[in-house]
Amino acid sequence: MSQFSGFMSFNFLDNEHVGNAIGDLGRDLESAIEYETGAKFQIFLGTKHLNWGDDWKRKLTDALGSSMLFVPVITPRYFNSHGDLGCRAELALAIEMENSIGCELIFPIIFKKTASLFSDYESDPLKKYIKGRQWLEWNDFKYDNRASRLKALSEHAVTVAAKIGAIRAAREKAQSIKCNDAAEDTSDVVDQKVDELVAAMKRVLHAELPVDLYEIGSIFSVEYSKFGTVQIAFLGVNGPDCARELASMVELRKEVSKISWVKECFVYMKTDTKWTKDRMSEEAKMLLDMW
Image (tube, rainbow, N blue to C red; front, top):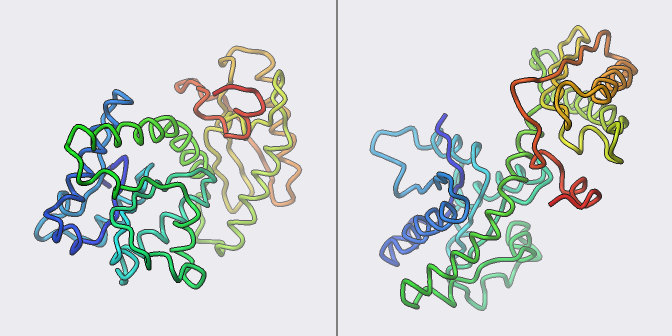
């Protein structure tokens, strides 16, 4: 799977009509975010990364699935792009991803705003979703000189850069619980077991801080099997040698073992990965004033 940091969703015909200005906008945003973060940041652009002969559906899905940032570039034809992986499908999948990780990853850009763009938003859940979000209105900048446009994008990039760590941590947390034999259960059963595991982990407070182990990001990964075996990789906030962290691991094991279907629970210290505050949830950062 190709790893893209971001995904720009746009109507190809509209991009063609404006002489690839939307594609240029994507590359400029990519550069602005790299400037703010000092790290490589690749945004998937269909006009750039889809080549003749590609399995385009798979490539689009993979790129969207690996991204930490989704940028829908809204034009009047954006919401008319139907199909398996038209703009509407891309946006719907991004909303689903955002809801699943509990962290904002959709940053809309209104490239061309018309009086009728959101006129029917009450009957269109995707339009209603975008209308309720803060967006960058490119109408105000697209006819300015390049320096002014880059300045506007840089300000937008500052906002994005400040959230990237939290988005990355939220995605990792959402993907951290997996079943080794998920095919044995229905999706409803899997969801129920994940909910029970998360609830148990949230009942254990950190030994020194008034935040539970799940929200503070001490849970690196969880694997469970149909036989009721659960293995939890634990990250110590104060490092692997702290006695209080070890005590938290004991409490975590006791709490997870109370779940009816859990037969055995093993908790081990993950020593090759360091805990960072980026692993904390927004709620935990707010509570501890650690931004």
